[in-house]
Amino acid sequence: MNNLFPYEGFIRTAFGLGLVWLSAFNGWLLLLVPGAYLVYPAGTCGDQIHIYGRITAVADVFDALGSDRVYKQAWSLEKILKLMEQERGKHFDPRLIDLFQSNLERFLSIRDRYKDLPG
Image 1 (cartoon, rainbow, N blue to C red):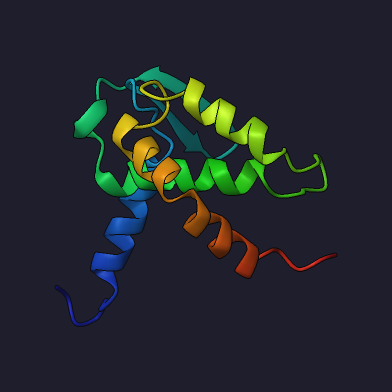
Image 2 (cartoon, one colour):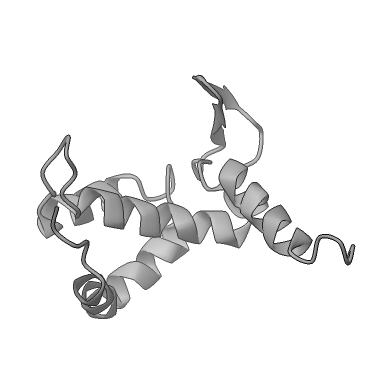
């Protein structure tokens, strides 16, 4: 690692996540390009997607759907869980959905502890 850039490993991981976490488990990849969204079948799917990306996909959807935003109301827990089950094996790694479901109380506790501040 270069001493002039001590955070190179972190940046490489973050860059990889920026491309990978938007991957769907079934192989479609969404790449963010300044000013545009490109969607194409990248050929990377299942376990070929780094575990960081697969975990981030579950966490991001759970957080985003369960949080109020200026453009939307938070979804009910029931609706979120239904979507995540429907997307099992498509957008989400089925094993991670199993882990998520079996540890739901822990995830809810974490979510409640770190809620967005109002305003």
